[in-house]
Image 1 (cartoon, one colour):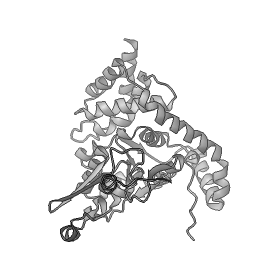
Image 2: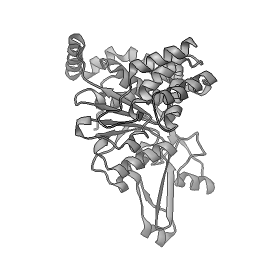
Image 3: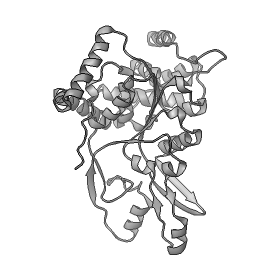
Image 4: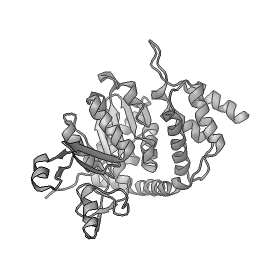
Length: 346
């Protein structure tokens, strides 16, 4: 008998506001492009990611589909589901929980993307596909711990799938595709190596975190963890109401975000910040706008203001700053806030 181990509640995690906010905003608007969490060991990175799935409602998928195709989205189905429809078969719904799919560091490209059985296709004329991590991640959270230690071509593969929402595999002229829409979350310890700037820019948001230095907060971290380890069920029950409240807020924001339209002033501010801070490319501008929209939706408003843009810029720009020799490319938060105050006063 497989007994599910209780997950540490998201709302019980002490501090780490930026990390929690970046994760929530990606849930509200997955097109933001995922989040990379950088920090030393023991700063609740993995715990927070795993706790996030507990806040999300179950999904309605096509029953029996190994790729977890969304039942209501007939435009983005896997090859097998499309073939069933062409053959006159009806698809049936099934409800499954949201989960965190983890990618092991030892994963190969075939393990990630999946494999096509060429011999089977040549003999029978039918496609036989062995699903990979990208198939299991569809509709879920894809978590890559120590992403900086993963081969660059695999990181590229993950980021491409995340951006397109589709995994396409071709071998010897035989092709197969399936939806692969997921929230990409990478974590890393900068002391163990960095990620190439070209790949770093592909992550929507980046958060740098550290352990708590306030004595009371640090003590609270220890007390809560001891209480959870001692009696997980009792501990999770204490936070059940907070969990439900946050979950409802996120779900409402996911509905509202489609109706939040940024005005010209918001577009001007997003582009202006990138230019002022010396950020190359247009991905930063778009990410700032999408994040600001999600921020507004999370706050329960249909109107995006400059404060939303400022908060978005703090998450979307630090890893996209130009680096000069002997500089870390970090974002000057004070300069950013001063510039935004000047914009507001105009």
